[in-house]
Image (cartoon, rainbow over all chains, first blue to last red; front, side, top):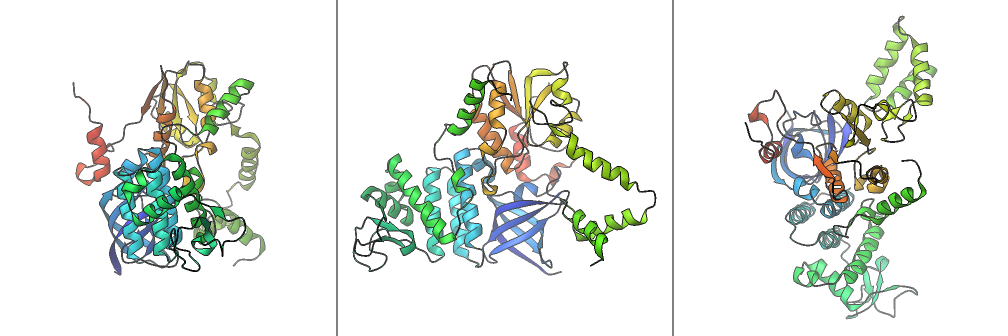
Length: 263
Length: 198
C-alpha cells in the first residue's frame, strides 16, 4: 500500500459528504497536502480533533488518485484550543494560515512549515501581541517566498537609507529620486517597527505605540496584497482592538432598537 | 455522457451538496427505472419548499409562518436562549427533550478565511433580543470545532452584562465509547469539565 508520513500543520478544512472532511495541510517535506479525513465530523471520531486548523500533527497518508487519505494522525502541537479561546489570536492565526496556503500554492518548503509552526506556537502561548505576530509572520513568509521588503536602503538603487517613500511594487522604501509621485511616506518609528518585525526584534517591536502599529500593519497588508495579487479574505476580520467588540455590531443593534424595527 | 434530459437530470442532482457524479447517476436511474417513484409529488414539494419556507422573524429558524413553532409556543421559557449555528442544530437539541427554552440561529460560525465575520451572522438580532433584560441565561451551543469555539469566545466576550448568565455546552467523552479510543483533546476537555459525584 503506497503510504507516506510527515509532520504537518492543518491550514484549513472543507466538509465532504456526510461525515468526512478535506484537510489541507502544510507539511515539512511534502509541501502542501490535500487529503480526505474519513468520518472525522462524527463525535466519536478518533482523530477528528487533531485535524482542526492550527493543529500540528505527525500524520500518515495513503496516496490516492486525486486526494490522499489520512490514515493516522498524532498530535505534536495542539494550538487550536488556546488560539480559539482568544478572538484576536484566532483572527490573526486565520490570516496566517490563509497566507501560508496562498504562498505555498506552487512550492514546497520546510522554511514555510517551520515559520508557520513557530508563529502558531507563539500565538498559542500569547508571547507577543497577536497583531505584531501576524505582521511579522507575513513579512517573513513573503521574504521566504523571495519578496523580502527593504525598510532601510533604497530597494531600487541600493542607496543607503533612511528613506521615507514606500512603494510595494518596487520592493519597499525607495530614494526620493526614484519614488513615483504620490508614494506613501512613512515616519521613522513605523520604519523601525517594520524592520524589527522583519528581523524578529521583539523588544523593539513591543516598545512601539498603537498608532505606529496601525501604520505598519497597513503597510504589511498593502505589501502582502500586492505580492499575492489579491487580498487575503481574513485580513479585514483581524481583530487588533483587544476586548472591545467591533463597533459595527453594537451600532447596528443600537440603531435597530432606536427605530423599533422587528428583530 | 448521456443524451439530453437524462444528462441534465444527472447534472442538476450532481450540483447538490454531498452528491458526486456517480451518486447523481445512481439517483437519476432510480427515478427513471422505479415505476412507483412519484416524481410529481417530489416536484411539487421542491417547489413548495422554496415558496413557503422562510426564516423565523425572531430566532432565524426555518418556518412556514412568520415565526417558528418554538417561538409561538407559550410553554417555552423565553428567559433562556440557546444559540446554535444552523437550523438543523435546533432539531438535534429538540430530540434530547431536555431543553425548554427558545433558540437563536446564527446562520453559521465566524470563519474569516471564508469571509464570514461577526457582521455576517445574526448577532445584531441577538443583541436586540437581549436588550430588554428579560433573558437570564444564554447557552452557547455552537459546534465543538475551531470555528464554533472561536464564535463562542467572541459571543462570551460580547455578552458580558449584569444579570445575564452565559454558559457553553459541555464537551467530553461520547456515551457508549471506550476511554482508550478518546483523543487527547477530547479527553482533556472531559477532565476539565469533570463533576462531583454525589
